[in-house]
Image 1 (cartoon, helix red, strand yellow):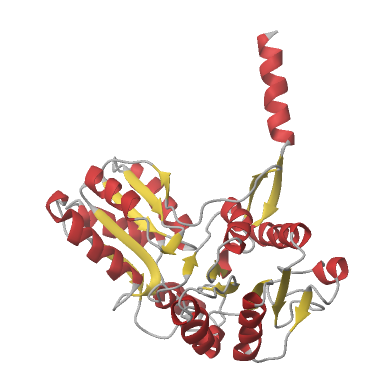
Image 2: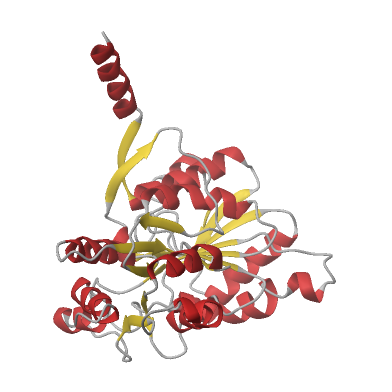
Length: 342
């Protein structure tokens, strides 16, 4: 009888899970936000009739109409500015910038207007705006479409910077971000869009200011985010085969950084390697490294390691592109070096 009840419970749990892609999870998050709040609308290049450059918004125009799914002209500065104005006026815009490289055309709006509005207005106005964009390399889109510049944006006070790496975060971060009174930027790694996973039917909003321990371990802390999370988990599995017990930290939020989770892990393992698809010089990995050294230097048994992208524009050729960005083998080598087993 107990066995039967257990089987029924397991069956019920399985029936409540839905398999979907990272792309589908983001679409469901947008659909949910549009349904729950009439102030929410999506705006960007090709988000309507075309269904989005990465098909994230496919079908939403037919469902919600052109007032809620707004195709914008090829002017990132223009429609980002329109989103800022709409947010100040009480709407809750979701602005989609096609790629992180193109977001630089809107950097003036993001840095000089959205991020500074609360400060410059003496706390009279906020900009409750969400900006989504594709980031990262791996799809042979060459140097003007493939960089990981989220670390640049994490440098700016007045905004939050998110990097969802899981199906649950892709589904749950958007609604939380829309409740924030200030701008939130969400970076979606292009190599995750086709990733499949299971999501609970009642999955809801998630925190946007906490890191997550994706794999517990005792020998070395592997700290990463976004598309590099899954390579890092692969590296941890490979290291386990060599009796190295790696802990994997998914930062999830790049601004603010969850220092408490980072430091707790490093204090436990006494070694750290940071994996960042951005460039090494003056990058996010350097910032995480500095905070560890500032606050946990005497807890360390080895120098903090970094695995970053090669300091060159992302190449087009597949073998060169793969060589330019962090890969599982490089992460394994860096972890073993931290343990003196290189």
